[in-house]
Length: 174
Image 1 (cartoon, one colour):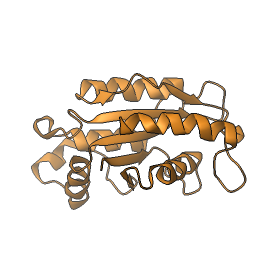
Image 2: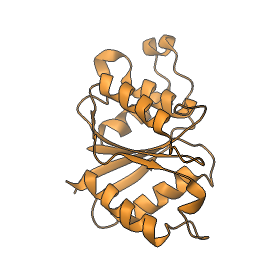
Image 3: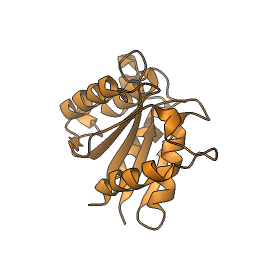
């Protein structure tokens, strides 16, 4: 069974990113071993840490290493990825000789409250992960927006979103 790590770019507990992740977890039940990987506890990357890695970095890097593929839920802040997401990518990539993203398959799902659906943020994440040697899937390209139209009151996808997102999530199972 594939192991899929889910990186949620927003740290808010009730964020739209978390709702998308919860729907993904529900989709993957019985199909893959999927888990949300926490990133909010990671200290900001600092090259000085490469001499003596914080315990949170050591644990996080081992966790990243244990997954076959990743689903990145990418919200857009000021036309780019969130600082937490950039930090999570950086922490797992350094030192460069122990880059944990190299060879990993990654699916990006962008979303925003506007109609562009995090196009800028997704492309920035794609650029960084591509540079780090990740196999970032070019298809499906997913830019969801406006997010207020995606969910029922209980946080599950509305039917139109659910059908589309089932197809999206299935890309990591192939």
